[in-house]
Amino acid sequence: MSTLNVKIPDEMDDDLQAYLEEHPHYLNKSELVRDALRHLIDSQQLADWARADVRVSRDQIAAGETVALEDLE
Image 1 (spheres, rainbow, N blue to C red):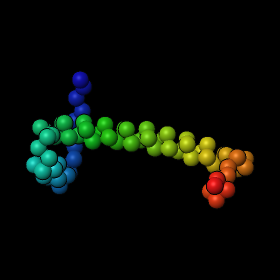
Image 2: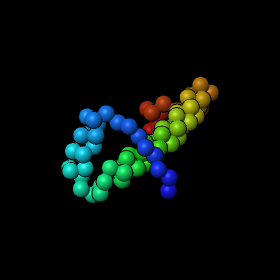
Image 3: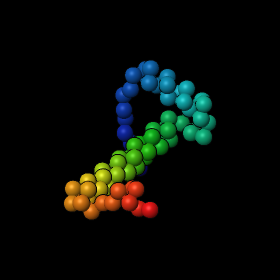
């Protein structure tokens, strides 16, 4: 496992400490930051997937490959 040293403002450190006190399942700041980074990376991957899906949908609309909702009955 590698180590990453990050400087943060004192206010952010206070916020992290308060969060840890409210969420005792995190044992320390390192666990909290690792989990936050994990969520950030996962949400970005989802965002990439969603953008690709929207791109396909727009291409289908432009090609006339869609059906109006009221025509589905």
